[in-house]
Image (cartoon, rainbow, N blue to C red):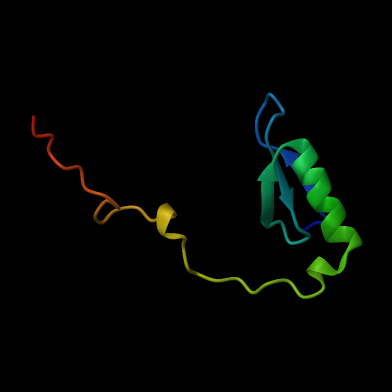
Length: 77
């Protein structure tokens, strides 16, 4: 557990960072500037006074398996 929000590098090159909350949950990922901006917004505004509730749903594009979203039609020449 952390006492404050933390930014951690995800790659050795330092081009991808993760922003974690005080419980260690990853809340954002992006460049260092993006994480720095989000950190400012989270800590200096009322955004996290009432954080959104967590859901178990997954965005349809992140689901694996099942039928593909489109079908390739055979090319008739």
